[in-house]
Image (tube, rainbow, N blue to C red):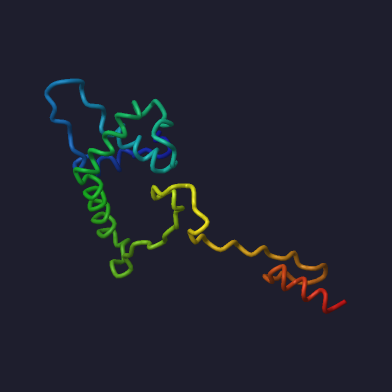
Length: 156
């Protein structure tokens, strides 16, 4: 039985030829490549930190080192190519609709390495306007609190 976030025998048969085998003649024997791939998939699917990798995948440092080595060697591009070919042969890819998601998220200044302390002269983002709670008996509204107060005072 295949555990969650692990490759099945059929999937491994497809990926095995593109994942490089260790050629080292000295030192410790290389870890099982399938075990390393399963550890990588577990990290990528769960979003956990490397140090939280379950012991069944081996030492987290070894899995992380494998991840970096394979990234530099272009192994993930080769895996993607194999999967594209398979899906194309099955007629499951519409190449006219192939696109990359352009969603972006803005990080804070300190996320980019800037100082967390901001001087008063540095422009900051405007504060979010607090939204008013709709008065009883009215529909939901996106009116700001200053507009809601003005509207209530006119109706009295």
